[in-house]
Length: 127
Image 1 (tube, rainbow, N blue to C red):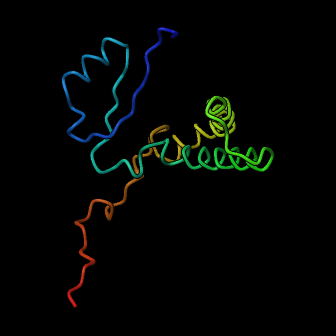
Image 2: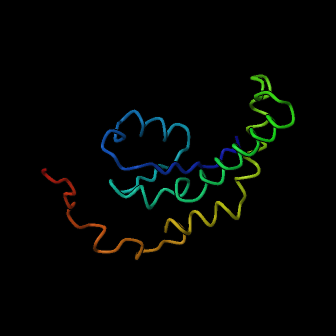
């Protein structure tokens, strides 16, 4: 470890607000950044722009291996192939774009529209 602080972005759900979490974060030099509840669908940079490309890279890696070897990736080689897919997907440019798209950095105060805070509309119907 470099000794530099680590930023942990997490959803602001009340179940995460535990004294133990705060104590552990402080002990391990982790800065906690809590997103407001019910906003993670727009604000989580990894969900917004990283996991999709990673899932595609992992599927492609598995398919390529299967095509070449006519079998699934063996357990003892799993980490090697997983890391290859991760390196393909986790590019600095992709990560920056995800943070920008999510409005986390640079901060986009206009990410949410008034409609995003409107009351839920029931879509159920009685037959």
